[in-house]
Image: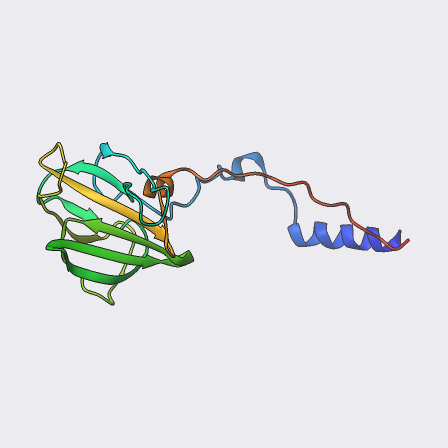
Length: 173
């Protein structure tokens, strides 16, 4: 019993008195780790459609309508691992924490491989020429973890917070 009172007293002393109502700060919104790669309202012209098997047909990213020459932004903090041509199209790939890699094409890069980038920083400009694009230009934005392709739009979703109960304090009395 004595241990319980000592622990309670230590907890009260370490926390201090409760703040007055005027001192309580409002809850902050979740810190954004990711942001959209294009400025403005995103217009999805073709959604993510994962292939049934690794080599099957599918759409391994999303196409976002944009304007030729508009800035393309890093969706998250990371390091550029590729900035150049793939099959004649300009591509930028960025590795981020958690084994995630985002890809952007067709993007005329303003970054180089090995360069660190911050979320929201420009990585290049959107080029025209994406096949099947119903707009002046479309950005194909991809996401994968390892060899698994994921829907990049999930990076922009507000995380769901779930509170768990605190287990009861175990005492030896």
